[in-house]
Length: 311
Image 1 (cartoon, rainbow, N blue to C red):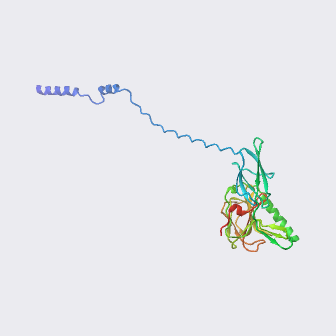
Image 2: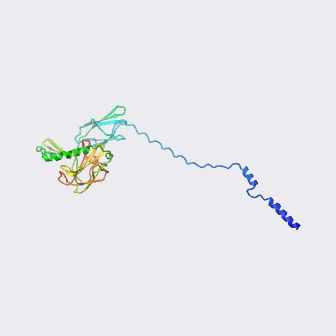
Image 3: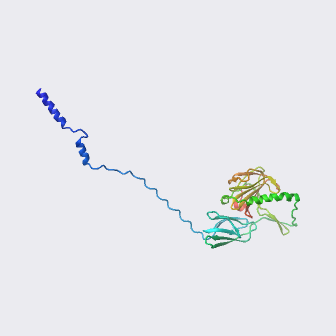
């Protein structure tokens, strides 16, 4: 009995010497370890600020692209700070980036003048030397005979001409003039811009466009973006079924002798979009498309704008 009590007492003493986890001794060790270490959360590095684009050099003069010859269409850029531009005394529209176009008529003078008026009132002038065009002339040893128009023709022709003039007077906003023009249809060129017959020294009227001979019903397309300002689906006496598209900045295309028109007045068309079918409506001796180009009142050679046609 005494031995059992002794064993019990020894066991009690042994248990009292054990320190369970979380007791005061452990708290003391934590206190001596110092404050907890806080590891900051890394922040993403800020994106680098892009460098500003380099300032555009100041343009002190004109820049041009295109042949300086009769029948050509020139693209130009005005000097920096230009607020007004005139060509032969007539105002010329300028894009926000300073680009503009001018047309050198088939019978343009040998010298033409541009004047840019700057914001500070100063002017910058440029004279262009215009080379003569290489037109196909046919000399006929016979007197010139002007056509005689009947009263019925005159009565019908007046309203037609009024519609053509009104269509070319429409002020269109389009960037088609900035594009590289394409041919509305490809094939054999059967008529050339500027060609003319001369009767015993007296010149007749010249051909104001380029003719492409292709079968009736062949689709033709818009050579550049623009807005349809005339879609004459009833035949005009000379032009037949006629389409006029304004490409902006005073530049427009006319397409004559169509068999069918696929667009309507007011339509905005894209380069390469089908707009009609070739025919021989109006005064035409065979199926072909006549493509005429004008900048304001100046007649332009499509060959100098779109390059040689294929086919």
